[in-house]
Length: 632
Image (tube, rainbow, N blue to C red; front, side, top):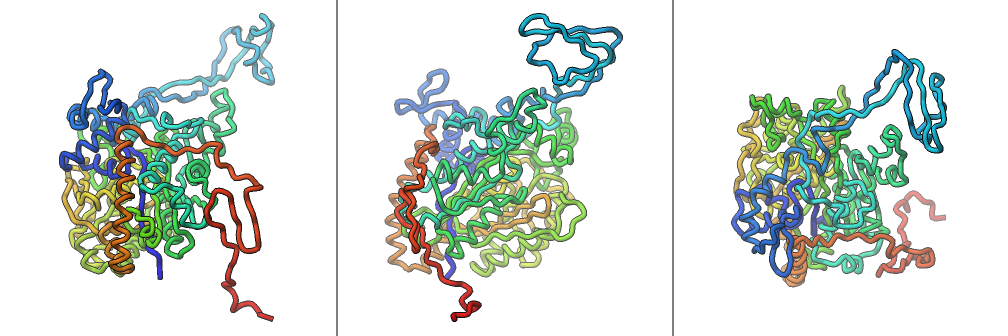
């Protein structure tokens, strides 16, 4: 009997805000929400952005005006809208009008030149055409005869000024002792904390129910951590007259999101892994989680990705490939003098390239039996994630055959479980939707042909990168968090940056949604395409489908017991959400505590026990190759 992997907690942060309890999703459909959800969504962002703080039972703004939640929403909604989602890069990331670069300059001397410099700044060795004279203990006089080569810092306006950056005023490092962590790891700590808190079940209660090695963490970033505290820092240190620190190299590794969750949030000694698949990285790690839970190798998995690639170096690399939408190309699309940064990401419309984003998204998955035992909230079920390569390629960055395979398998697997009717009438696609001209053609052709193969008409298609940009490794985590919101509120987000679908898009059997639409959806297909032929598609079932499957498996009595337990869990989760909406994020960060010493580990021939863990690790193994061993 296969175990059904179910999502019991989720959280994270991106340009739309906090993911847990569907706040980030609701920012993408803000104009379609009822008043209660609108107020909650705006309030969550307003406290994150430090527009107001909660004190003495009221919300207080910078003018010391006391307000209710409703008044906060009415006063600050416009500010929240202007300073979230895709928009112009602001100074919290970098100054896009003044990006630093180094220029080599040859100074051709017409006469002898002299300079005073600090003794400690002298190069070694001294150039042959330099004469050095002592001025005092700290300074020397340099006289140069002939030419000299120098490096000079210059500044320029960046060609790409749009990105899906965190809501203005929200600084992850301010919420815990970040200790020079790269921003992607800051998002990992906050995102994984949000997911764990969202469960409404204390982590130590989870660990009481399972063996230590029945827990796993699978998480990675695509490029690693690329800001000054990671790869960029140590790569540029000497060029900027500095030197690398002891933290920059290890913290830049793309396995660090998993390592941080283990070491500083969970204290886990279970399985860990970091699967990298370019822009499909999150789904690669979700696949590890789903396969291991289905096979019974693990009972609890924390899965996710954290990455912050909105840096000049990374964006310039993609711009050199003509992959990013530059300001000039965006302006030309609209026949305007200036580009509309808010509409930079335009999946399936006339577009100029993709828009970079930053994000940290994490999900807690359990097997169905454990979820019922704990009374966990079930946000979705994930029966399958498919990964396939492209075969031979001419260009490593171009799309290929593998995505036809992953999409077809995902639809076929869903049909086998829930039937044709659900696939044809209550399923939708969360497209990779990168917003490049090539993607809109190639991905739409795949969807259209798969729809034809399965007899699907008017297949709804949406794309969350419209709102939050492309965060690379976590991109499909953004898709999944948005999908859980669709299941909860039954509103499909329209691709509102696009006025009409581009003429070269293959949409004979597709319904590419440009405006928010109410819709009863039970199945979602998350599609991701990464450079190098990294294709992945996940099949996601709504809570109603998951619950009907569990009721069928366990029966009425067990289900009633589960529902009773769930009430307490929901109350605890709601309490956390209320606190987070008031600005108390309850970030989990355990540094230097709970370290397992050698003497706290006991080993016998049948088990390992570790202090602090309720259950032991079993060392009694069956021989899976008994038929291949001579018993004599």
